[in-house]
Each structure stands twice: as structure tokens, then as C-alpha cells.
Picture 1 (cartoon, rainbow, N blue to C red):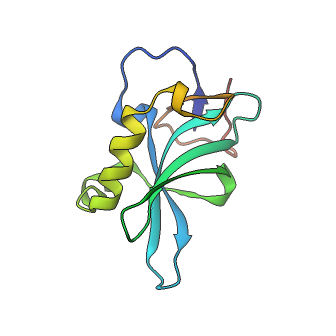
Picture 2: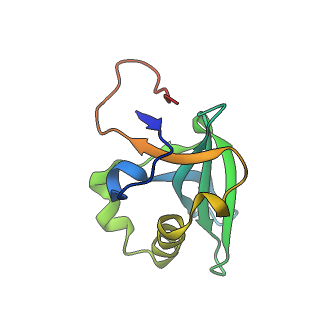
Length: 121
């Protein structure tokens, strides 16, 4: 599903980022986040930016099995949500100097894997 690389040339919206669902809040509203990096030594650990109801950006580290990846064909509709747009802008403009040590930019493929998604480092 995705692999990691550490050479940043040009960023591609679909290939370098993923929108995920992190579950629901206490009001049963879906919490969305933007994946933009993975841990080099354990690529299953993802770095995600999310925005709460007050518009505060939060950086979260979580395992890939704890999120649901949203297919890119649904992104246009999700980009109507200002919280997702703010999280995406932050993820897009952040650099490795802003991230915890050991995280590198992700590279997502659009192919459907035949087995459990894996990350190559």
C-alpha cells in the first residue's frame, strides 16, 4: 500500500499523503487526519496531523492498523471540511526538521494489495 523514502523531490498529493479516519469523538463525529510520514525503523508507525473541534492541530503517532484509510476518490468531498484542509496544509508544508526523530516522508501507491499492506524502507 505504501512505502517510505527520504529524498524529497516534489510532493504529490495522492502519493505522499493519505487521509485517514481515527475513529469517532464523544459526539460520534468522525475524526479525520492526514498521514505524511512513517518511522524509518518501524514503517507501520505513522505520523498524522489532525484538527480538533476548536481548530487546534495535533500531531499523532499511531500504528497503521489503528486507522482506516480513505480512498483518494473521496478526498474532494472531504476537502470541503476546513479541519481536513488545515491539517493537510500543515502536513504538506512540514519538513523532517518538524517531525520526531526517525520519521521520513511516506510514498503511497494506489494499487490494491493482495495481502496485508506493508511499508518498505
